[in-house]
Image 1 (cartoon, rainbow, N blue to C red):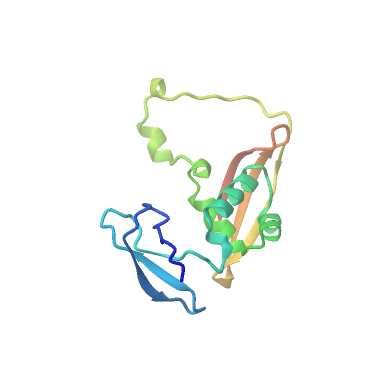
Image 2: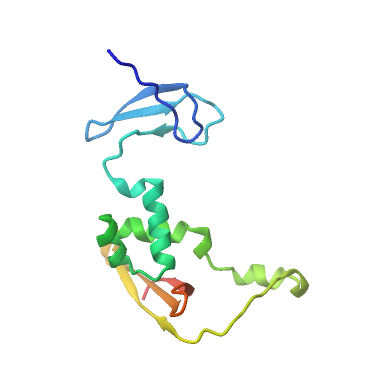
Length: 155
């Protein structure tokens, strides 16, 4: 018999206990370390869209101008996962106007350059139900292929 140590993927503690099984009969574990920010985890996820490497790929593809449909087909994950990952990414969050109003101009470094050629694209997907579509409009600079600005919301 071979025993493999199970380590928490978040805090790397070996104080791990079994925490039942999922609906698909996969083992769930609980971290017994009180300082760990996460309670439960699985070692072998059935849905690969929640893996950190896939989440990084989603953000990288979004920053390079790939559409949601493009990303879902390339990574074989759902459009909802792509939308949620793009919404949570701090590199893509917009600055609230209320924060801009409180800043002093000397405290803000602004780097602006003129984009030679840019393109605005519209992508949409259903979130939860068919009568709740969500749209994403990125403005993409052609030269570096980066997202200049974006808007998420209803049509």
